[in-house]
Length: 473
Image 1 (cartoon, one colour):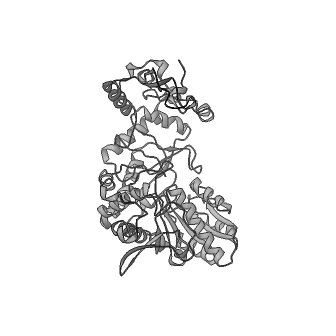
Image 2 (cartoon, one colour; image 1 turned 180 degrees about the vertical axis):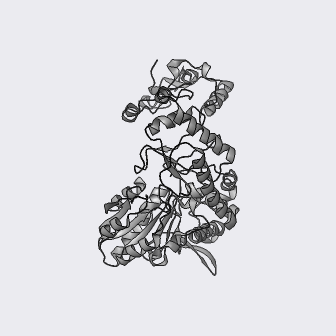
Image 3 (cartoon, one colour; image 1 turned 135 degrees about the horizontal axis):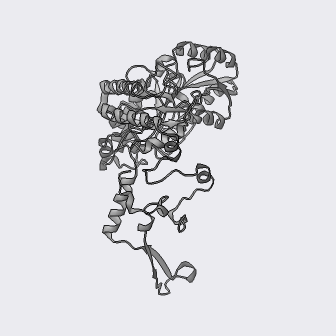
């Protein structure tokens, strides 16, 4: 956002640096070496000098907001600064081992994978962990497939999965993709699981209840022990969506609450990159009774060293080899560097930062007490307009209009990495945007490289290349 706006004309507002993208066409002489249908007479090449190219990309980088510049307080998405030392560890040439080599020649690799399995199992209160799924959503789907395999092994054909209405959309998708009918569970007046509705929803058809704790409003499910007992009494399993594990690190474990399966969003909790479609990682942990169904391969320690093996009733592979190796290296490095005390400190600061920020903004927060995130409401002002205006104050806005339990929601998660000065800047942007005039909100943003767009047209007719931009468009 910090660039010289005067350099660019209004005609370029949708692609401010379009005028800097120059090319030239040169003739090509194939000398008749190849058939005519495999050659061309001319070739279009970039026509930029090295200084022009360097300055173009430098200016482009200055126009992009990033977590290196400031917080991304996107509630439920947990976008936080990732320490660069994990990149250095993953870039170590010793990490570049071909996964098809024999176990005896990759003992270091297998030792790290086994160590990460143990770390995550201990953190989650699980008995076994697979590292294979390549993303959080893939881990979610894997966990549901494990649950399905468990029920089928008992000749127990169940057809339903219960999911709170405030859950992540991937929960509904994972259940449906696995062939289950989704039973949507409403929240009570306090924003937590409606126990009466849950009692009515549970039946002999219930394969699992998928739950996030704390939930999407940042509220801890105080009845979690009773919830687990109700699900287990009906023969179902309790699934933990690891999206909000950041609030519990070193202080509470899903396994101790009665959860049977969980996936870990290592990009949210353990500072690995967000996948964006890949590569990512979404390990899955299970209690002992479900360990035999985990994907293959797993890693175990024997008297002769580490070895890969296939669990007895494995659902098979859900990704190549042991998963996205370099992402797993980063997760291992982060956990090892922080240790028990550091992980507990991270969760404490995540909760502290959310509560401090909420205390500094003028917007109402209807549900509490919350932990690592909160859902404020912009009241009679459009949350999306307030968010766009926040961009003009140099910050990234929070998630808007979700969960639907809060009208005009602004779901905010500052994470543990932000200091007081950063939170104060964010609070100022919240308050200034919220207090701005209707005209300011309706025309915002005005100080960013890209202005307000027609979101409907952009979704229906996306332009995926700068070459699709015509003159004056």
